[in-house]
Image (tube, rainbow, N blue to C red; front, side):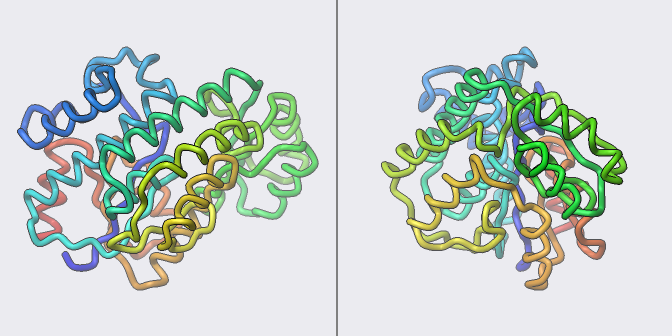
Length: 308
C-alpha cells in the first residue's frame, strides 16, 4: 500500500450514472457532489446520474464530471484504507487536473472551476472551428508523425505503443485517414468527437485557460505529478501552470508518462474514473504491472481489499 500510483480518467470515459453509487453510499461523497453543484451554479450531479448522454458528453459537462468522480472515488478509497499513501499521480489530459487536486496543487473547488472553464473554452473552440480526430494503429511512430506533417495536422495523443491519435482540420484528418494505408499504417479510425482536441485549433481555449490559471493559487504537489505535455514531473507552481496550459494544444505523451513511472520502480496503479480505459492503455505500455480500476462500489471494495 506504500507504492501506489494514482491515475485519473480523461474525456471520453464518462457514462450516465457515474458516481451515483458513491453518492448513495457516503455522506462525504454527497457533500462533495453538493459542493460541486453549488460551486458551478448548476446540477452537475443530476447530469452525471441521469444524463441525458448528449448533455453529459458536452465538453463543458464531462470534464468537471470526470474530475469530481475521480476525487470522490479517491476519498472513498481513503476511507477504506486510512494508511493509503500514494507515491505519484498522473491523469490523461483532463485527468492531469484531477491528479493535481489529489496531490494538493490546488483546492478541490479551484480545480473544479478550472476544469469547468477549460471544458467551456474547448467547447467554444470546437464550435468556432471545423475539426476532427483519428486514431492511427501503427507501431511506427515516425511514419505517423510524417503523415501528420504532410496533412498539416497535429499529433494529439501518444496513448500506447501502436496507438497514436491525430487532430486537426476535417480536411486534414480526412486526408490522413485516406493516406494511412499507403504509409503502411495498419488502420485509421476517425473518432466521434466534437472537435480537434490537443491541436492548434484549440489555441483560443489555451489562451483563455492561461488567464484563469494565472488567478489560481497553486502549491507544490505533495507527491510527484507527471504532466502530459512534458512526460515529466512538475513541481513548481509556474511550471505547473505552463504545463496545464500547453497541453490544451500540445501532445498527450501518455506512453512516456507511464514508462517514466514504471522506470521509477512503480508496479501498482489505481485507476479512478469510469471504465477501464487507462488500465487497457497501461497493459499495452508495461506488462509487469497491476492496475486496479475503480468506478463503482464493487470495484472500490475489490481494490481496497487487494491493496490492503
